[in-house]
Image (tube, rainbow, N blue to C red; front, side, top):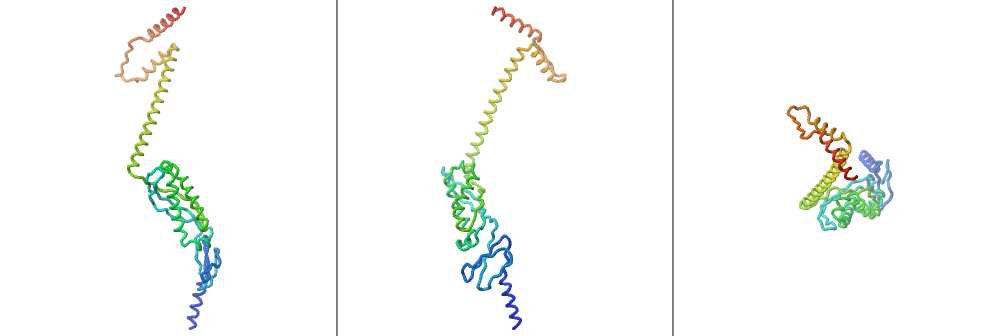
Length: 253
């Protein structure tokens, strides 16, 4: 009998001990009513009469399930995300909400549909961070009354119909071809300007044409199979140019 009494006493003693970790908080209910909040460390409760629920105060992660949403321009997309939140008031989170993890997940899911429904597809693809911030703002307004704080909401995957993906791929390809054509045209224009400047310089400099001819011959290399035929000597070309200039001067006089 004494041994049974010892066993019961030991059981009651250990039932009264609650060790709360540094990242946790304990909410104590006494006969069904809120009594107090346990802080990290060693705590004692009254067995049978009191019950302690331990809440994790670290940042929690909850998936937002993939769902189909219609954008503002009537494009169906499947989108999912993730919500990061933490408990800032354990008493309110336990008493006011039956399951605060499920509640915040559902509310973030509804907020995601509302925000995406007011945006076009182009905005959705280009402004993911902005969308996450808007959903976070909407969700935080309600989460605050639940003793929760939403730290971030991120959009993960955006899935579109295959036909729409093909259309966007063709559009992107056409845009790249357009940029390539514009770049090539700009390059041709600059090349023409440079050639015109070079021709003007060679015309004004007596030895420029000869130097250019020698550079061209030197660039052919020492291969025996390369044969260069100059139909008109360079000196004759220079003489013709000089005569042309003198003739123009005579006409002007």
